[in-house]
Image 1 (cartoon, rainbow, N blue to C red):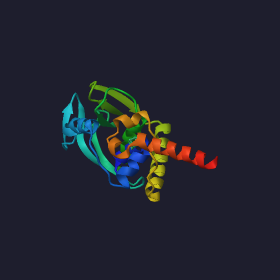
Image 2: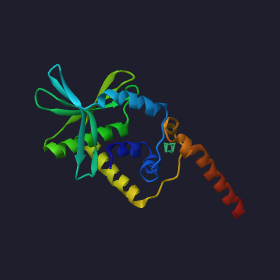
Image 3: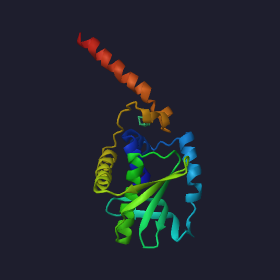
Image 4: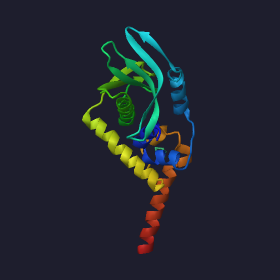
Length: 198
Ligand code: SF4
């Protein structure tokens, strides 16, 4: 499974299912901005800045979790500590899905290198601010639990129904998913059921 699918799943299970089961992809301004932000980080290589080595576009995987993907940047600090850094397009804001994706990258690195990784960071391009993320037992458990749920969803081959929520407004699949119409449909269905019962 791609690491990014975990992020999609925590954003909205239907989004992950539409992508992974139906194979649907779509762009909107948010995905295009995200691609632009990743342009530099997607070029493999390394540089040293202020005593920290920055490894860019580093491939990572986990046999145990069945995951693969890449880290935008992995920092190697002077004391040997490693920290994955994920680039995001928006302003500095904490999102559970972003933190879980970062933590999943750390779990891959831990399995590959046989060493503990305690923290990483999300770099928010719009505000040019960095947010440190600690890989707590709770966050690690969320990743493991969500991956099990995601695997169950993919095994079921069932796309969950749309439920309109604020996150839908920024979803690149909005025009395909039509969550408002789907909500209307279910309301119409409810009303017709009530009518039939009377
Ligand atoms: S539009 Fe909303 S319900 Fe549909 S996939 Fe996106 S987030 Fe999920």
